[in-house]
Image (cartoon, rainbow, N blue to C red):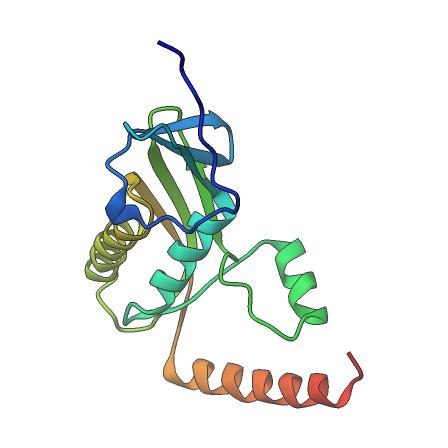
Amino acid sequence: VAMVKVRPSRPRPLTLRSLNAPVHTHFKGEILMDNKKPNGINKELKFDDAVIAKIVGITCNEVEGVYSLEGGMMANLTDMFSKDEDPTKGVNVDLSDNQDVSVTLDATVRYGENVPEIFNKVTMAIAKNVRQMTGLNVTEVKMTVKNMLTKEEIARNEAKNSDKNSDKELQPA
């Protein structure tokens, strides 16, 4: 009996629903999902850690009470020269060899909000969205509250950001 490997002539998109595959980390920063079907087609799906960080960042910004996620000095410098917000700012993701995802966040929250309740909502939303979109398990979420802003401070920041955005639009790309 001869084994023949069949490869499609062009890559076809895979949906995670069609994959009942184990997930393996082959090296830090990238997750590989493989599934060998009886029809002889080898399939592989990879997730870079930047993709997981983007899911986490967008998810956090959708949770009520989280004003923003904060990056370090380099992220803040990059923002000065960029027109677009970086959804991965303030997010650090670590992927383990056994498909576990660990998340560390630096956040600014709204003054007067119940921070433990916000943290619980953030944790549950991250775990749900990462699992739904990638099939990976979030096993740890750590959040450091870097700042707590009042309504007045938020209004000043929004006005300042509005001025910066109008200045960026006047500059050639």
